[in-house]
Length: 325
Image (cartoon, rainbow, N blue to C red; front, top):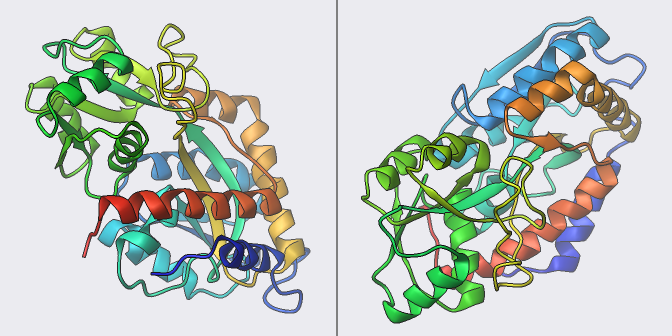
């Protein structure tokens, strides 16, 4: 697949501008229940964030919000539903990093990223943590990299599946550090965490909130935070960049989009209402308790963020030869 950053940026910005003459106007929205498609199973990050903001939006919009979980095919099934929906704001989509990595992992998608979608905003971000099983003689990222160079292709790391956030974050680390570890994919984050706690794998990159009980119980050792800044939950744990790999930064992000061609006024109306919901003290506290940081960047800025993410992950996935079909 040929990749052009300029072309993707133009496509994302065009999608964010929308079509001024199609669908329901901002003043009329909504005129019926709004469906938020969650392309994953109930209980995951996307599902929890959607349900956190939904009550406030229902109060504001005076219509029911239906959370429609459509899991399968790495999020493609649910994403396709929204790509083909009317751009009137009544069908929305919540996505994570897979939205920008699937175009490079799957040879064919039943929609075009980003052209078939209208960016609205990021709902939240979540720092990830690199952990090791306590039996592995490493205390830091530097130790990990030294051990990987001493034992090339002998160390293992788990993930929640091929192309998952943890898989890609570790592939980027290997790419930047020029080391090789063996990937062991599992069916979900719970299985991957259970495997490392049991000593079946040696390393894992996973959500900080999910790993905290294991870290505090000394069943896993926290080596580094993958984002650009330290985590409030683990302030003593340095970032990967601080630990000898400058420039490394990977965060989990969770966002909301609509079908391509949504009118700009409607996009801005939905964005404003989402920001109001996210800033409400009780909702903000609930989101923090779930392990997320506040998101809410304007639609145009989110469009640029998508373009940057596409440009970041394309070479990582290509070099690693990651394919899911």
